Image (tube, rainbow, N blue to C red; front, side, top):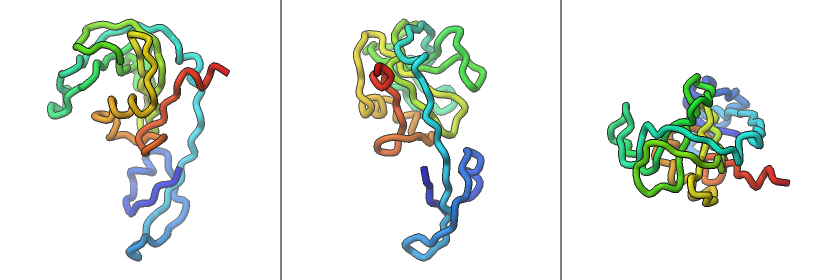
Length: 164
């Protein structure tokens, strides 16, 4: 992945290295950053049945950003810990109203490049969602993170990629 910018510091902190300096269309010097991205194997996670707690139900506000309203139920998997030391965060698809707990199947994983944890996508009703549908539903929060994939938002790993 390559990023062109005149900013310094942010990309270095997130694992990028300066590749070279070039001029942009206006003649300004820009740094070109490079990041090597390793594909991760989520086969042990995808298809897994999980249960957990919803701590940010659909329609609730983010605890530190009250203008951010959750259009989807968001919570964590009980007893499974993520890279940040807290329980594994999940977006829960299926319910059309706020819920307190869930049981479902991990159907996808969102991999954040500039964060220490991934976000699991859980379906409670067995429905399969396409990558664009997932991205649209979680963009309210994920737009602030650096990810890969179509339209520059995220890379979503679906179970069928590992069924071969």
